Length: 325
Length: 157
Image 1 (cartoon, rainbow over the protein chains, first blue to last red):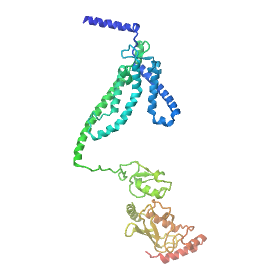
Image 2 (image 1 turned 90 degrees about the vertical axis):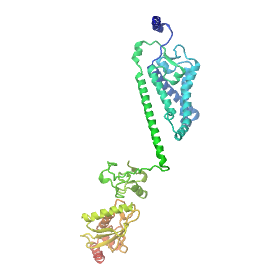
Image 3 (image 1 turned 180 degrees about the vertical axis):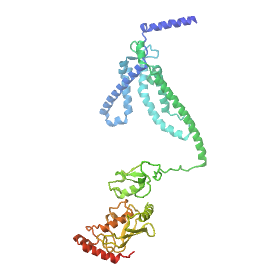
Image 4 (image 1 turned 120 degrees about the vertical axis):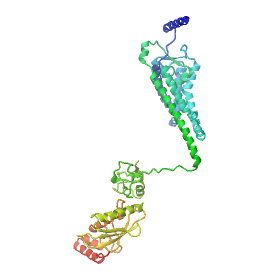
């Protein structure tokens, strides 16, 4: 025990000395990474505009409208390919003085890792969304025919969303990997300079945001559970009902607005609730451009033959009548 | 729609004719048989040459009323610039192209009464009486009307 304590103490001493002697750079904190990322995404969008301009000259406007996602992917790949893959820093990383290190923070990541990052950062998300888009309609069709339990009712995009949210929350807590691709390939940021304690404290952290995301996810999960539970129950009761009544279409409730009901469209005063064409309380009150109100059926019958308001003779076409709701 | 509206009109006509003085020169206005054929009786306004006369008006209501105007005709003879002496046809714009559903049978009857006092000699159906009016011979105009009123419209109903 005492030996252990001693060695611990030794280690602590060594760690205190490390910044001076060992050539290990301090890991970057979350705020700097976020700032670098913002800068990068700005330059990425600038690059995207330039790429789009070039593509427009080469292929024409139509291609740009049909392939906006492809252009974005190409711009992203170009940006990362020209900076990270070649071993230099992106503009955002230069801005906050960051550089890539491996998970343990002792080496610069190798070319293969950086290529993998390039792929998973730009190309793979695009491919996945394309595949999902093709798969999803089929998935829904199967879902309608077969009973789903709560797990199957989770859609891929929902799972992906939740995964990304968890990842973001983790970043806010420990400030390691802002991109999922960077987490997978172990590209961690380190400062290119020494950081004193005061500077680090003044920047603060994003732990509160991380906590918020986790509570949000928890709420969503609870809601999803209770909803799917209720759906199961209603489905069961529905099947019981459908045993008794088969082939009867659900009755369509009439959507007519009948002004003989004083609760409807209360803003129309009592003395003008009658249509002066049928002299009855209006059904589906409709407004002519001049402001006079009639039943929809009455006024559209009239306007087909006579393009004028029955009351004031102002111009009135059938398509200019506005039904009130 | 026509039947419903005519029912409503019938109710309000009975009320208006019995309750108010506004339509004192409309003696009666009632359907004959079904709701699409009516009969109205008007009295000649006092202080006019039509005074003391009563005229029967036959009203035919079209199936697409009130989109289309009712057809109205004098049954007994009336001497008036805008009424055909032989057929009883009335030349009144609201009974033709100026019709709107805002008119009812009752208000159309009042319009005919107003036409009696305020003839329009520029679009005549009775040339002779309208020429008298146009030439400014009011004495002859009033006299001729009084003659025909007494001949055809006293105790006519």
